[in-house]
Amino acid sequence: MQKHHTDVVKENNTLNLLNTVKRNGSMTIEGCCSTLHISRPTVLRILQELKDKHVIASSGVLTNTGGRSAQLYTLDPTWLFSIGIIVRRKHITVTAMSLNGTVAYYHCVHMEKDLDANLFIKYLFNELDSAVNFLKQGNKEIVGLALGMPGFIDGPNGVIVNFEQVQDCKNINIIQMIQERYGFPAILKNNTVLLTQIHAEQFLTEFPETLFVLIDDHSIGSALYNKGILVDGKRGDCANLGHVSLDRNGEKCFCGLRGCLTTTASIESMLHKYNQRCYGKTIDSIDAFIELLNHGDPVCREIVQLAGDDLGFVLANTAKMCDIKLIVLLFNKRWELPLLYQATIDSYNKYILPSVRGIVEFRQDSFSSEEAAVGAANFVFDEYIFKCNKYSSAQLTDIYLR
Ligand SMILES: [Zn+2]
Image (cartoon, rainbow, N blue to C red; front, side):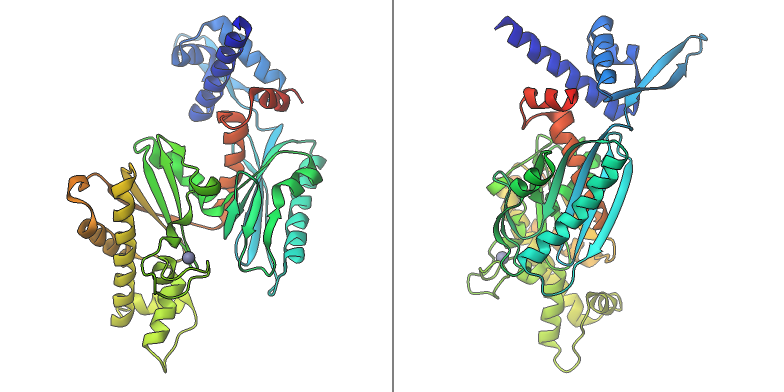
């Protein structure tokens, strides 16, 4: 019992020290002692253990005004690596990242049209093989992998439930396949959730209760954080804001239901609505739609305003139920949509319950699809190294000791 308690304290101290070094970039021994309120011998022992396992490395000296210099410690960029892989409708992006956040490998492949499940898996393993071989040739240790998928997933069981753009891509235990092929641990998440990892830190320090809403061409995704921790929600993610039903008799959504938020507020659905309204002069690209919008086309403006009205309505109803202090709308870098942002806020204020009015702040930010893979690689280190909230300390020790 006593030993067990000691192990827990030791593990907590180790995790706190690692997170402090991560947050600050580099730390001295004295800095660790004063930040963590632990003794110098304990800090020295943990640092030595982490150095032996190539988790922490010396990184020069800090010269004080008194002339004495102190050794600096940082996350070791040379040994532990993670792999992030993001699948989108038409392409797969892979990145390999060192523990200190340096991207060592990046590749993106466009998948051909009319994919079936077998071909999709072939593409996926081709990309993974290349990243894994790159790291193995450099004698790097792979901590694990995070795979971000669109569509519907069962995260805890590692199953792609339905990747609806690919024929027959249903009920595939992809995590088991990855682990059998490569032998390292892997995580399956919705790609929106992994993308928000890049943005999370900047907002969560001030607002630990934040809802991210990602407005993309084809879909609307979401990720909810409570007390700074990702809310797992249904089947391992909380990403389905786009499939909140607005109209039970509405237009059919790709999920199979009718009248989902995605059918009115995704950018493709706006384009679709424009073409329904303006027969005879249809447009075939989102870029063309955005250009018309920027030139003040009244039909475009009306459609965007209606989309904002729907989005604000759904967000107000979500905020009535969940403890949310901040809502961040993430727009694709390719399309700025200030009108949608403002219309969403106006609508939110119209539909929010008077008793909870004024609690939620709104912000907007932009994302690029490339950064999602980096978010996925980040997630691996968070799960297996910095948080250790999902895997036992035995497994963590196993990673350290290998
Ligand atoms: Zn739907």
